[in-house]
Structure formats: C-alpha cells, structure tokens
Image (cartoon, rainbow, N blue to C red; front, side):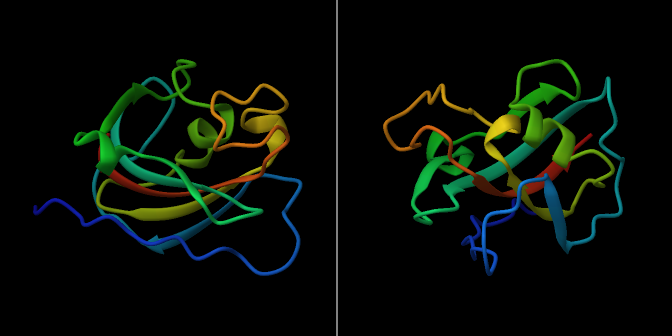
Length: 124
C-alpha cells in the first residue's frame, strides 16, 4: 500500500463543538484501532479558531506510533481513532477538555483551543 499524501484540513461549519466529533473521510478495511493495540497514524492538526496548522507527523517525516488507551496521545485523539480501520482517514474535532485545555504545549495553540485533526490510520 502506498504512503498516503498529506491532507488539507477543511474546518467544519458553524461553532466549535463542545463534544468530541468524528467524521470518516475514507473508510479503511484493515485492522481496527482498539484499546491496547499499537497504532501508527499520520496526522495534521489545526486550531478550529484559525485553521492554522500547529503540528503534523508529515513535517516530522515519520508516523506517530502509540498504544490506544496508553496515555501517549491527547484524550480526544486517542478516543477519536477508536473503531477506525487501517487504510482509513478521519476528521476528529477535539474540544479543549479532551485536548490541551488551558495548558497549551505550544504558542501555536492558544489556551482553550478546539483542535481539528485529519488522521490516516496506517496500521493497528
């Protein structure tokens, strides 16, 4: 399977949701992301308010690998990929309480930001 290309992120319409929302852009047909499984994802993250990119695994030159439910990813991303199948692409909108809240790790993410990720699940 060829490596997916970095996606653009289209911001959802309207106000930032207060709950975690997911929308499948491409349905995968591989193994499912479940708690305890190690997954590899490519992702792009932007803030809902500005649409400005704050992080991307493509910029790091390698996928992000972590165990689902293991606490290595922010809660919203960890929960948002569950049920995804390898080969899929999903938009995940993360409210501040499941993202970084008031403790921003970066000047690119204002405190209290809603985050929008587009995630490609490479393997589970």
